[in-house]
Amino acid sequence: MSVNTVFRPTRFGYAAFRYEGPVTVLVGGVKFRARLNLARLLGQCLTNALHECAAEVLELILPVPLHPKRLRERGYNQVLEIARTIGRELSIPVDVHSCARVLATPPQARLAQKNADVTCVGHAPTGCRTGGDPR
Image (cartoon, rainbow, N blue to C red; front, side, top):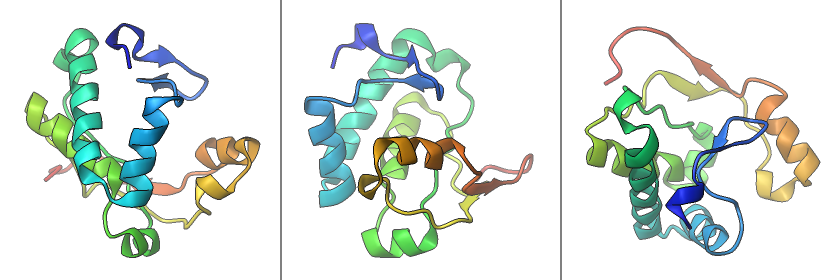
């Protein structure tokens, strides 16, 4: 994971890392095996990358929420765990109240890549309110 190659544009936004090699092991460990120590490691890697290119412009971290059913199944939101590390390291608030997952989509690990891409952009799986207190 080279910090020199982070935040490359993709068709969906920006990617911090290529999803290959050690990154797949880290993400899989966090997402499917409750290895929350790896969430902290990923958060630290992202923090280091953000220090180099964007940390000064960030005002708020808005982690993508899990649907309540998926959260009950998994017991934690891996994205929130990563966001907490970044927020703590960069002194940026993490807003866990402004968005809610309103559509229970199928797990992306069970979808073909083409269908997984559509799940990301084909509909709005979250509902977000604007303004107000992010705490």
